[in-house]
Length: 262
Ligand code: ATP
Ligand code: MG
Image 1 (cartoon, protein in one colour):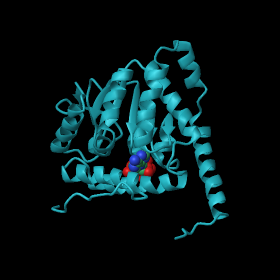
Image 2 (image 1 turned 45 degrees about the vertical axis):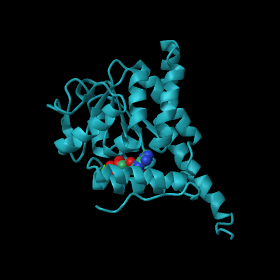
Image 3 (image 1 turned 30 degrees about the horizontal axis):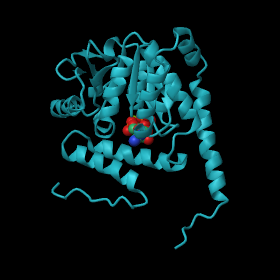
């Protein structure tokens, strides 16, 4: 625990990726990122390599649909866990402001201390209200984990829930309650990705700023135009396109020179 923070030179070829890891390690040391969150990040990085570490076209379309869903929602909620608080706290606050969504802390490995620390991170970024701290008094059925505990003003009554980095079980439980679930998940094959209503297959650090921009851009559009955008989106074919993207990319890579020259 006493290791000093890593100094990463800007010239490092994997600077961006190492900086992201650093943010998670810092969050872990500060006590609000779970050990399992570090493992989950590694899983995400693997899929990011396969995707090519950029926002692919199907993800751009999922972001548009997600923005429309948030703007059409009566009661949108952004669910925040440790990794999200470590990686994109400013974007969570900006998105809440742009879309009118409420912010709720919701943890798989819930401890009151972690919840409070995450709420503090969000408040330091300008969040005015953070649900799920003292008011996680309601429960959603079909879940064993601590994540069944939700705020009666937030996830319990939400019609649209954005769950960047979510677990499959919980996504399913929220869908069974009739909610529209928007997930951000680099793994197009995860249960989360397959159970969500709209899955953005992208890194949360790229997807969240783009989602904020999409909400700001679509905000003045007529309701009918937003509904059309949403109705024109099909999550199954979008996920298929993401998998096809990886297939094509791997096929191209398999024919090219992979070793580095020095
Ligand atoms: P599931 O329960 O959905 O089948 P899982 O058990 O593999 O999946 P969880 O730990 O429940 O995964 O959720 C973490 C998910 O988040 C993983 O699918 C992982 O690929 C993804 N992920 C991790 N880091 C990022 C990131 N920075 N951006 C987007 N997705 C990420
Ligand atoms: Mg899981």
